[in-house]
Amino acid sequence: MTRDPLIILRSAGLRATQPRVSVAELLFCDGKDRHVTAEWVAERLDAAGKSVVLASVYNTLHAFVEANLLREVRGAERGVIIFDTNTVPHHHFYHEKTRKLTDIPADAVKVLKLPTAPKGAKTVGCEMIIRVR
Ligand SMILES: [Zn+2]
Image (tube, rainbow, N blue to C red; front, side):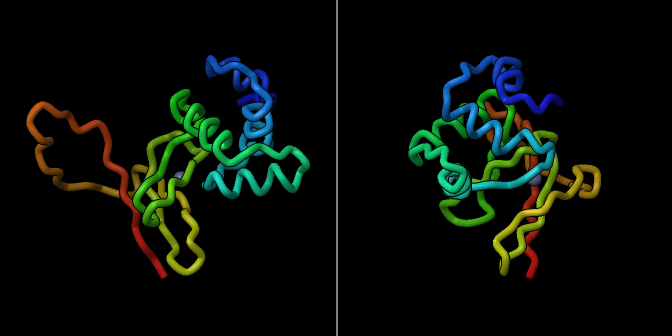
């Protein structure tokens, strides 16, 4: 994957606004997968002298989710949305003391039975969060 934020945004069909370029540089340009909150992103951008208001960071992160550049992880912590740069389906360990997620490869978990989806709905995924201390 390229590490040029302009190419990443263009390939995803997103306009290269300044907040998007700054967030893409922060999240994608070192090639490392990470789990971040909007607050973490805003703090890092601020520290780098590229301040972006928190609402704009949220809008940018949600646009990246819609464009499949990020995945949302909900449910690890109440009311906290974690954005994951690893967009391949996988599971997570949630470390309660450090409040960090680590990835578990999808094939490391075997789900033996799932309930039938509610009428009119179709199961499209199953992601597990395993809590550890
Ligand atoms: Zn992950």
